[in-house]
Image (cartoon, rainbow, N blue to C red; front, side, top):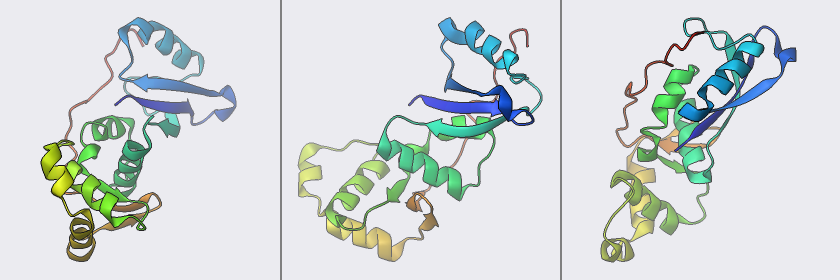
Length: 165
């Protein structure tokens, strides 16, 4: 998943915003850093920018990402980037009207996003969803009820390389 962060200068919002993909493609790195420097942000040591928004591309993954970010009270861009590596493990219920779908999506989440088609077809999604809802602790967030399914935020990405900033 590619995360796009909408960034601005937290002390000078009038400088505008920049949309930056993470990870930054090597071919766009110098241009992106130049853009951030023009806005007075991008320090490799200081927290000089504000995250005004995030674009995750896929609605299901967006709900997982946003709900877990809310549950974990994340605010640091490094944590947001690290979350992209593991948030697919979480289950988020945004609509309780189709428990069959909720249960099947939950089963896929806890099985790494894949399972044999025969097993998926035999799965009684409604029963799986009811078991999840009634027997596991979910956290209510503005993005839905999230179940972390044992997900742990790990530091996979720890810093933006220093390239002349």
